[in-house]
Structures are given as C-alpha cells and as structure tokens.
Length: 281
Image (cartoon, rainbow, N blue to C red; front, side, top):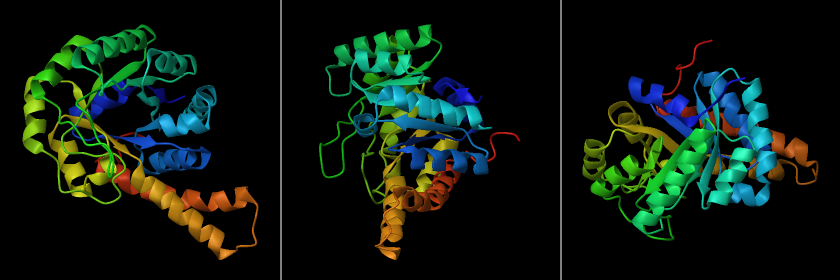
C-alpha cells in the first residue's frame, strides 16, 4: 500500500524544490488516469474529492475508490477531502478512510475560520492524518471575486491552527480555463517571510506551466490544485469518442477512450511541478 498523508508528500517537496499536484476527481475514469500518470512519471499525487464530486458520489464510496487505487499503486497517493465546509464533512471523510482533510473557512470571519480549522486539525492529527486550511478567499473565474490573503493574518492562522498546509489567495482563481496574467508574487513572498508552513495554490490551471515550475522550485508552494485543464482534456476526448460513432451506446467503451488523453494531460501537469522522478522504482 502506498496510501500517504498530505504531510508525508509535502515535506519532501519542500525540501527538494518541487510541488505535488492536487488532482480534482469527478469519477472513476479520471481517478484511474491520474494514478496511471503518476506511475508513469514516478511522482506522488493527491486525489481530491471536492463538493462537485461528493454531490455525485457518496464519501464512503469515494474513500474506497481512492484507497483501492492507492493500495495497487507503487507511488504515494493521498486521499484528500477538498473544500470541506463543516466539521461533519471532515468527520465523514475521516470515517471514510481519507488521509487528508481540508476545511475551507475562507468566507468566515478570521477568528471563526481559525477556531474551526484548528478543530479540524486536532481531529485529523489525532487520527494520524493531515489538515489543510485556507486564509483569504480564492475566487472563481466569471464568479465570486477573490479576497487576497493578508500576510499577517496568514501567519496568525498558521500558528494558531496547526495546519499542515495553507491555501492562499495571491491572484489565483478557481475554474480558469486559460492561463491568467500572473500571481501576486510580492504578496506570496510576504506570506513566506512570516510563516514556514507549506503553501497551496488553488486554481492551478490558471497558472502558466513555467510559473508553476518556478514557484515549485523557489517558493514554499508545495501543492498546486489542478482540475480545469484535466476536465477539459476529459471533455474533449469524450466529445471526440461520441462523435466518431454516434450509433455507439456502450458507455464503458466510450468512457475508456478518455483515459489515455487524460493520462497524457496529467503527466504534463506533473512535469510542470517538477514532481517527476521523485519516487524510486
């Protein structure tokens, strides 16, 4: 079994100057493609179950899927709850076998975010798993606006919550389909100057590959969440498979044709973070 906690994959990344991809999962086909990509690249990965995934598939099933894939893999695989919004979410994920819990209190008042995130971190650490929190608010392309992370608040948040990783808002956006205009590097450096916790960039698809590589090698960003570009690869492959033979109706045969393209897209994402070749074998 190579099931790992978030802390177990992020500590080597920080030490050796690379980042680990947090891969947004929606179904069995993309999960399997991500693990195939990680095996091919000899890289650790984080399989993430976000709100959309959990609305489609119950947490206990997702936990079994993640753990099944991890047990068969020869590279570290983290089973991560993404954007949990309550203690109940996090307890349910822990009961389902997840090895990392993210509590997202980014829209809450600072003290409430600290208190609830600290409670999740305590819950996680007591069970031998990891915790990620978020300070500042990462907005959405075409949707809710971001609120940039205040460096002093980030330092307090990291200190008082005890999280293993901290998601920050430094110009990154969720659901961005094309690379954006760049991150707020002065804000990121100011955060780094005040805390030594591993940092997380949500909305990694909106960060150009060259910028990902640079930050992975030269900053405390040790995790990039990547979803949109992989969903786009899946959607394009599915569209092509359906149009190639409109008379086909066997969904297994159709969906199988998405796995190779998604694997290739995931391999490119892994390489952009400098994570390839980090696992022996």
